[in-house]
Length: 349
View (cartoon, rainbow, N blue to C red):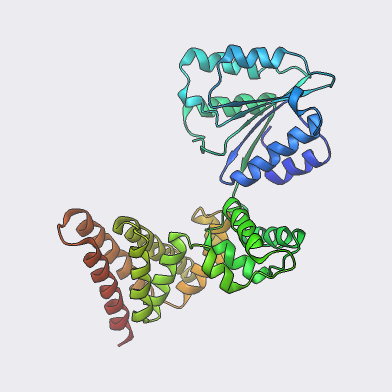
């Protein structure tokens, strides 16, 4: 069967462990966490050396079959994990053998296929067939990105557990800086905890100094500066982006995405669609869903539809120029930003 991440977590907590799992999706942190909890609930901490076997990639079907058929040592069950299995890499014979294996898992073993280094494409034939087979014989869970407020809460708890104070608002800022990734937020929180030390406090200045912003977050700040008419701030951000050696193509791509998001948000606003519904309609999940609803939508609401339409058109023209012109790429970016300011000023006259 296919279940949500919440139901998966609840089943694991209650000790209701199945025989076969396929865990994948956009949040590696949660996928790893649930895999580890399945292992612990099944074999505990003391029998890991005897009753846990880890495989990577696409194992030989004969080897996997041998592992599955061998009995656990002084225990009722054992666990076999297969990390980053990709059905699309199998030839037809291997694919058939793997499907046969997962169709008949004995009660003495728990097999967990989990993906943290790859994100399977559910539309591809072999992957689709593999998911269907696991659904029939076990549990499939596509783990979506966690929402920003929840990530922030977990970061606050992580800090508190280490004897460090991290406010919710600062944790939310941290989450936004890393693009709504629980994995990155957890890693950066650990770094900030180490810096603050037990009994210390993580401040906003600490976060600004120690946690690098994701490109999308920096470029959103650039767009916000342009929309507010703050030329000095806009060109300071451009200096920072180029000092980080981020390619002009990536800068323009992120800036184009920011304005396209705002244009979509404005159209949603004009048509009476709520921020949350608009985020779902445009396919935003997890941290991006929260950012769209709470940052992009309000920002777009204050801008004219005509202005945003012009910005999207200008971004398209700049993309063509950036990829075809011999002119210095930084000059093209700066020229585009100047034209964005001109668009804004023209609309205000």
